[in-house]
Amino acid sequence: MDKQLPLFLFLIGLLTVCFIGSLLVGPSAVGWLEWWQWFNDASQLPVDVRLILLEIRLPRALLGLMVGMTLGLSGAALQGYLRNPLAEPGLIGVSSAASLGAVITIYTGIASTFALALPLGGIAGGLLSVISLLLLAGKTVSVLRLILAGIAITSFASALTSLALNMAPNPFVALEIMFWLMGSLADRSFEHVSLSLPFMILGWALLLLMGRSLDALTLGEEAAQTMGVSLSRLRLLTVIGVALSVGAATAVSGAIGFVGLIVPHLLRRWVGFQPGRLLWASALGGASLVLIADIAVRLLSSATELKLGVLTAMIGAPFFLMLIFKTEREVL
Image (cartoon, rainbow, N blue to C red; front, side, top):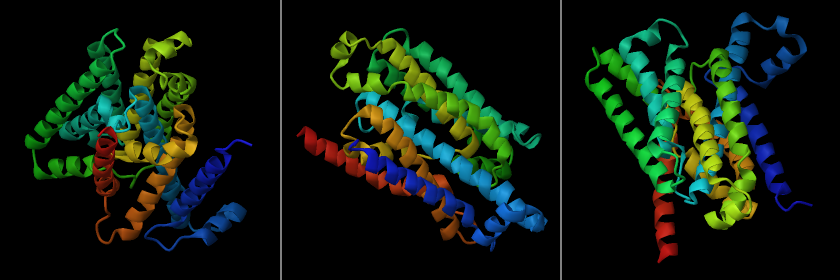
């Protein structure tokens, strides 16, 4: 029996519980009885209850699952490729570029013209970051050059986002930009799910194809090449897979940080430090973590809902510092 089977069964069970919990928790008194009635005879439910169940809670739960899977999987892929436990999806600039694309639609007023303008702008920013990253990184397989290119894109996109905030035509636009940058799954619909899901699925597929190559890369680049691993192909899969999935996730949810850093680190020892298996485990763990955080956001909020990105940052920042100190002690 596979030694990791209990772990994966636990993660699947945890994700199932979290997903069901996300469907049941909310400010309105709608719970499992209404879901049970919907399964038996949906026509007997009032219109407002069906609206809460199917147009508010279900797409929010699905997006939480999708965004969490994306961030966890991307974090594990980047940590495996860069062989650095401090790597996370924002490292290559995709999150910042996607955020900038969405901010531009708010700043110019395009976001108010039709509902999907904002996520479309975010996806366009993410795709543009892929092209920029590949051009800046060049044809070499240098990890350092890839990181430096990502830092350059992140810095430039963050600067332009700050410029948009500084030059906002009125306080309401600036406030809307700030609220979106904080990250949230509230007020999302199935349109957001259908728009982002194709990009995420393609990104997931590319990243999951990297499993065996990442396992070989743990032995070193030269050993991996002798085992038939193409480093240039591996870099291409990493960049495009992370960019497509994280760009789409950021486009519909805003910036949600630290999930891709925390989850792979917590699960690495439980998969025997095998990057290939860590991809699957981090996808499940990331989905569970985002759903748990989104449930907590709804339970902790009063008049104004706490933003999901704020909560994950409050959890992730101390964890990041702890990880830095731990890494420093191991080096010394």
